[in-house]
Image (cartoon, rainbow, N blue to C red; front, side, top):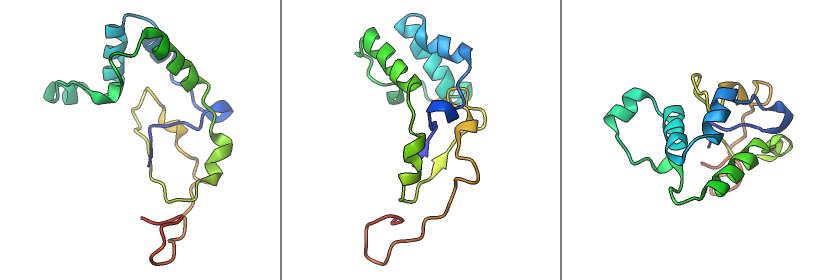
Length: 126
């Protein structure tokens, strides 16, 4: 499963500058709040007050967070995507500001991978 991801590189649809700023500037608490606002709806957070494990390690120092953001910004997996041979579910949200849904694979890229022979665990197995 690939969820909320981007091919990176020249084919990626970048998140907005407001989102980039909210993740790169501010105190750790402000950045954490920005991530919560990007990942969850207000209705969901009202019903589930946290803590939220999806936000990573609270003990991660600021320099490591910044390096993670830089690595994420430089991500480019476009050339590797055709090498995926296993059945893969790709999930994107149409209202996702963190990773725009335009990063979902284009229709001409999506293809059905035939099931593997009975008993094998290779490409296409469930």
